[in-house]
Length: 63
Length: 281
Image 1: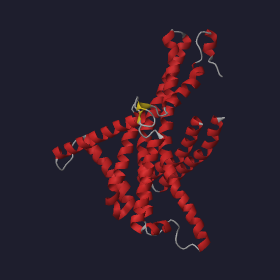
Image 2: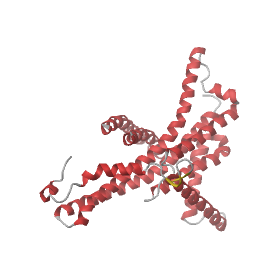
Image 3: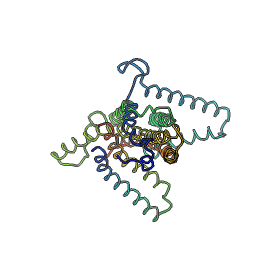
Image 4: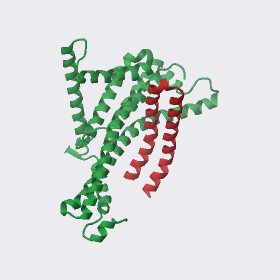
């Protein structure tokens, strides 16, 4: 059961990380000179999104 | 439970995946705090032990850096000195100057301490056999509490106690809505404490559980070969090599996560300090 719950929880995080990557790639294509700064922001946003997925993972293991 | 086709023909070798659940339980149990010295009330758990190791490593790095820097003079030489200097400058320019503006000098010691402490703990934790000091909810909660108290005190110093409490709600909202927004803002401020602690803990914990799972899989699949050479055992040993390859990839990702999480924690602390200091919302 816990595994199913984790899968459900990851849907949102997957959407979020996909959107972040989409935004990053489109803006890099438009303005290649901001690549450096954009990469930092992208990593940061992914870290936020990833944290949500990881909370699901840890709760699955603990509970 | 799926059985390996090769195993069934032989009938002597058991499916390595059968043992996985109990090994997983053992792995997750090994992550709970167990005292090395004393008991759980007063004592040193394995996490605090490795945290002390990380602090000693950090102090050693700092003192070696100072000594080498003094020897070199103005121009730094060698990879070590340049590397440490790069990290400090990164912390100063990208974390402090970029976010805090004019008051960066006042907060730089706090932010740099947080960054290097968490980074050192994370890196020590990734070394096989070591545990991360930050992989335990107690440590991360304490770190988050320090950061929380720091930015609230900074806010109260720059605006006054009443001023800071008032400034949580944005100005220019009519009376009844004002109170509601204030309550929500206070709630979200306290939520920062929880998210700071849980984010760091979950990243480290989950990363180490995944690393451990692949290590267990590799050893479980290699075990049959040690008991006797057969076609099935050789096939499973081949799978074990595959697990080790995945383990290597995840290990690299974990090194990256160790640095990124230290960065994220410090960056968020800096953002909160900046929000507390800002005059207008």
